[in-house]
Length: 171
Ligand SMILES: CC(C)(COP(=O)(O)OP(=O)(O)OC[C@H]1O[C@@H](n2cnc3c(N)ncnc32)[C@H](O)[C@@H]1OP(=O)(O)O)[C@@H](O)C(=O)NCCC(=O)NCCS
Image (cartoon, rainbow, N blue to C red):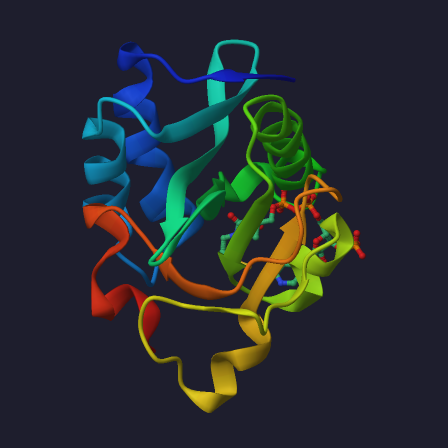
């Protein structure tokens, strides 16, 4: 299994992957818009032989009133037949390596802390999500520092258009 940046020809496989990984959730609109962005998105695929078995998008973000270099992880999906084999973890870790090299200081995610805690994500309190979160989701708003010298960011995360949709931030 290898991890590499996605290319245009991967689009069909990535589009097939998400309904399989998330049968109850339609993530294709946001995944498609992220793939359409000309820059500012790290898009990695996990490949087993010729088969794309996992994908992650990580989007460059800013604070509303500061110049920090931040990123928002997601969606992350692994094909159902390949889950719980370390592929999701490999995508997250490779993403962190590439983002650190690119100068991103902190990565944010709104997902299950039981999973993301293992990659160093902790509950975020200094940076607010772009939309108010339901109380039950507060522990799911997490971040990890990739650059310990960067200081602690404060403010509200400013996300690009594909992620700037209230429906993505509420149950
Ligand atoms: C969530 C997902 C990206 C994880 O990728 P993966 O390759 O299956 O997971 P990994 O092999 O890296 O990690 C496996 C570990 O994570 C745990 N895990 C997997 N999915 C989890 C989830 N949704 N919540 C909490 N823990 C989870 C497994 O129990 C396993 O734990 P263990 O190491 O203690 O045995 C993948 O399962 C997926 O695409 N799922 C789609 C549906 C879903 O669960 N979505 C919720 C997103 S958090």
